[in-house]
Image (cartoon, rainbow, N blue to C red; front, side, top):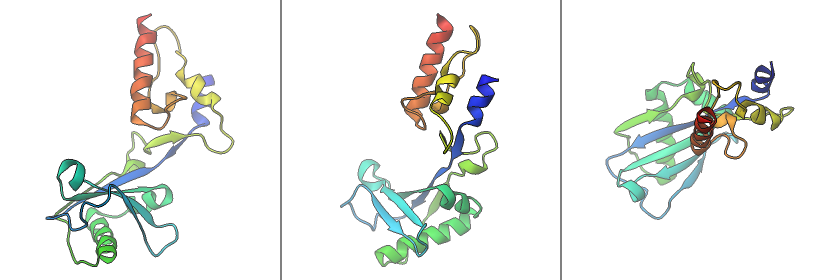
Amino acid sequence: AAYTNAIKQLAMGVLNKCVLRYDTAFWGTATDTFTIAGSDPHEFYQFIPLNNPVGIPALVAFNAGSRARALEAKSDAQLQAQMAALVNKTFGVTKTPTAIIATRWGLDPHSLGAYSYIPVGGSIQARRTLAKPVNARLVFAGEAYTERDASTVHGAYNSGKAAAKALLR
């Protein structure tokens, strides 16, 4: 019962990525990240260019929350058109991405989101409860089961290491 109650105190957030690959990096090399705002006050995207760090002429757009959920409903073709229009308007170009790939974590039936968070009314105690072994043979692990690095990949990794150590005792 304690584990079930703890799980109910957490919620799932959505953070999606949309990678737009182009023939050339027409945005240049002057920045490591930039933000583009759309016409809707809630529409903005954080972009990370991949040309500087890895030599790929691509932009990774991050979108979160209700905006991410709205974009999940779009097909890849619709998403490509919308994102390309935003990038084209910003840079004053008419470029078409050569490829697109997008995550849709909120639609994944196994995860239902990208990361856990404590909603209003929730408690950090939920994470503490979930991090405790159920018994000597059953321990849960993941980004939701750590207090220090919750909602991150390294939090999931560290939680897995802690769970393995608990089982080996």
